[in-house]
Length: 154
Image (cartoon, rainbow, N blue to C red; front, top):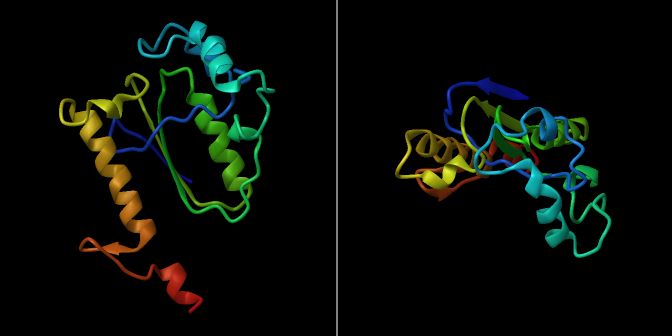
C-alpha cells in the first residue's frame, strides 16, 4: 500500500463503506467535518438501505468479497467521519491481494474534490486520481495501450 500524508495532495475519493456506522472515526471525528455531520449518518443510511440490513454487502462494501478486483485508489481526510471506512476497506482489499493506493490528507472537508477548479487541493486530488487511472488502465498519450500486467500474460 502506498500511503501519503501530504497536505491535500492529489488523491481519490472518500467512500462510505459501512452503513452500520461502526468505524471509530464516526466518534473521534464527530464535529470536525463541516460537510458530513455524524449525527446525520443514521438518517442517510436509512434512505440508502430502505429497510435492508446495514451489513448487506450490496449496501456496505466493507462486508463484501472482492475476487479479482482491479486496483483501487482511495483518498480521505484525517478529519472526516468516514476515514475509518476508507482505511478498513483498503486493508480488506489488500488482504484479498488487491493493489491499492491510499492518500490521507489533513484538514480537508469530506468531498473536497467537488471544488475542482476553485480550490488547489481539489485540483491536486483530481489530478492524482487521473494519474492513477492512466497508470492502471495502460493509457499513454491519451490512447489505451496494453499495461505490463496485460502484456505479460499475452
